[in-house]
Amino acid sequence: MSRRVLVDTNIFLDNLLNRKSSYVPIGEFAFQFFKRTLECEFFVVMCIESFNELKSVLKISEGEMWVEVLSSLKDKNKIEIVKPSLEQKSKASRLSKEKGVSYVDALLFVIAKDNNLLLVTRDNHFFCRVECDRAFVQT
Image 1: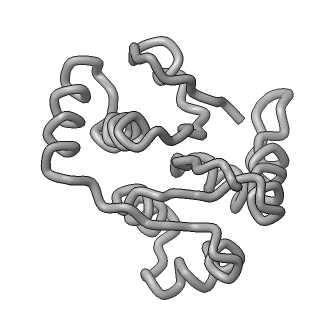
Image 2: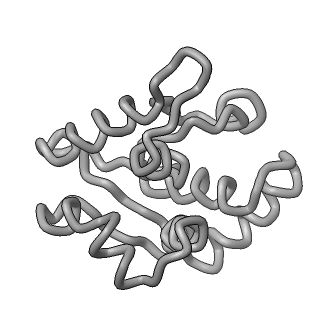
């Protein structure tokens, strides 16, 4: 069975834009993550807010998102888009203010924790600002 993972927007962008940092080919790491997903190691969960954030950054429509960005995951039934509950949004809003992180990042944290999902991200604040009993993976 595939491990269910909540994927942050930055991982999608790393893959799509083949981004690089000083010494690390982060685009290649993201590519390998999605390759492993398509090989059934992972099942991607994406928050609707991340979906909309990615759509906005790429300046594309919802239809284009499904065709240009998510088609390989959709074709293999390896993606689910989730909508947070009002309670999750409320928790995320409080956490965002308390920890000084973006609302979307706080929301990802809450959704991951509530659904026992592994959060795949490169955001450093998940490692040094947010305290929880869940393990977070940096790709």
